[in-house]
Structure formats: C-alpha cells, structure tokens
Length: 208
Image (cartoon, rainbow, N blue to C red; front, side, top):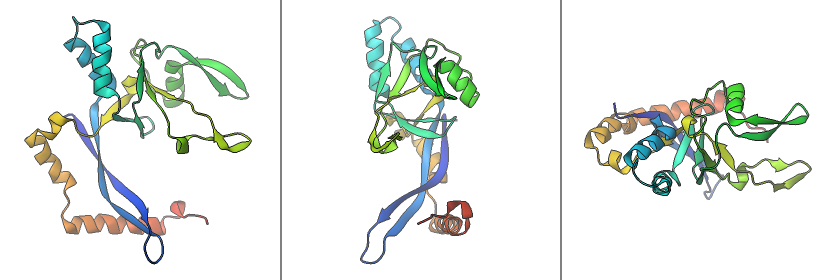
C-alpha cells in the first residue's frame, strides 16, 4: 500500500583480527519501489507542464542523479550519474555478436536478451558510470580496463531506499519495522541458517 517492496538478504564484510581474517555478516533488507523511474519522470513532467523544458530537465536531475536504482531483469544495482536527454531507447548501438559487429536498438536488445518490451520509444536514457573494479579487463591486458558508460531505460529501473517523505510517514515506518526489526532469536536463526548454507552448499565452495 506504500508502493515499496522489502527484499530480505545479508550484508557481509571481511575484518582483520589478531588471529585469522573474519567474515562479518548480518541480516539486511533492500527497499525497492514498485514505481519505475520513468513513472517518476512522468510525474515531474506533469507537475511542471507549463514550465520550460530546461526547468523540467533540471527538476528530473535533482530528483534522480545520485540515486541508486535496481533493474529487475537482472537484479543489479546501479547509480544514476547522468541523464542523456539526446539518447532514446529506439537509438542503435554497436553490439558484437557471433564474430561480427551489428547495429541494434536498445529496444531490440532488451527484447531479445531479457524478453522485455519497452512501451515508450522516446524515453531518454539513464547513464551509470561503472566503477573500475566492475569493468572487465581488456583482452590481452589484464590491467588496462576500458571505461564504458552503462545506458539504462528508465522504464526498466526502480528506485531503491526511502525518500524523505517516506521517512516522515509514521505509518509506513511502523509497518516496515515489523519486517526489518528482528528480535534476537529470529536474527540468530537467520544467521545460523546462512552460515550453514555457506558451509554445506557445494556451489558456494571457494577454490584456493
């Protein structure tokens, strides 16, 4: 009823001690909005319908740039670093496929790769700048990595986290607490089950 979903999970970090390295992990939750980024852009557009285009662009950037989003088709988290107002999902890019480079539109790419159809061919593209560690090494040179911005259709992106208005909504925060604030016993059970999974699941074994 608040337009959000709560995804359960874990957060982990490696900590150094006087003895061996230790894995610290705890129960964590990801807040995912059910409304797409494109819907947010539509709402802003209608709120400034009589204002110049530049004002609309400015308000959208203020609302979105710097925010974290999730793409449901691959469940990855990205940061919105910019909005390319000149790019459209119907535009084409060069894709290497079966030994040759072909031109393909973003619409075609997402339909062929993820079986999702984009309804608005004129929506601009969100730009996410990947961190260096996320870039694949260039062939023949493991150290050199090419910086390639990631372009994402707003229609397939969902906001994460809580807005200031949500944080000030007592009813929402009260309902969230029922799920996110675990009592010590439930927290211990979740952590023990996760630890058991790490130790017994063959697909999670690390080869040294």
